[in-house]
Image (tube, rainbow, N blue to C red):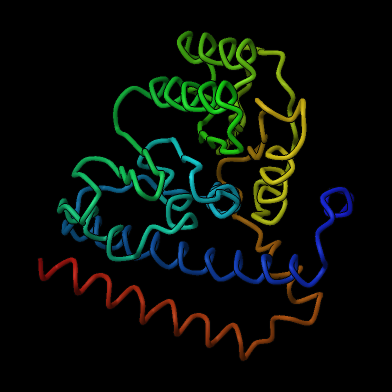
Amino acid sequence: MDVLAGLGVDPSEDARILGRLVEIIAHARGAEELLQRLARAGQIRPTPPAGRALAAMVGAGHALEPGDWLFGTARDWPAALAHGLTHEALFMQAFGRRHERTIPGALFDRELGVSLSEGSHGGHVAEAVGFGAIAEQRGSGHIAVCCLGSGTLTLPETVASLVWAIETRARVAFLLRGPKASIERLVMMHRVPVSSDSAHRVYWAVAEARTSRPGLPMFIDARHGHEGQAAEPLDARELQARGLLSPELERALQAEVTSALSAARAKAEQR
């Protein structure tokens, strides 16, 4: 990848990151399947499925560093998981219980840097821009990543926040996830299109945005064109092509996912 050469990334480090992304995606897919089963059984309230946007969320969340912040809605929990949210915290939230720094009805963790609310969809965009504007003003190296869909992108309050982001040169990357809209408001901002199914590409788009100007503010457009189309395991395929993912390792990973999710669910149900 050209971006890797530009950032001076060692190929072995890139392979490590790709491998970790594949692991997180497996955990997130397993968690999503379990959450949907629990919701259908009436044991938890319905949880918005990440669907085909899951890989992009994982890539963006894993690219965050200590001091960065993640903003979005409850749908963006895979990004929080990739940023360090524990399985137990996720399932405690699903069962409507508080886990340490999280609060019911949202995933908010000040220490980790996660703010996924269930309020106005345009509100979290303004919060992200505010964080990014202050980071720029203070000369901080921290950034905000804000997840949003095409619907939020069309809200007047979102457009106002995006204009403010441009005027203040806010250190924020907006991850556009989910299906594309047929019509949307246009905001003249740097836009990087990436595959919706590649956490790896999204990860490096965020990394590049952090270090380059005019890289921020920017759109990382990881939306897909067909709502019903199944996600493609592009990251796993790339890891396989590098000879780093065998069928035996895949089976071991699935066993690890099952064990971790079972333990987290049991702890959440006991509290």
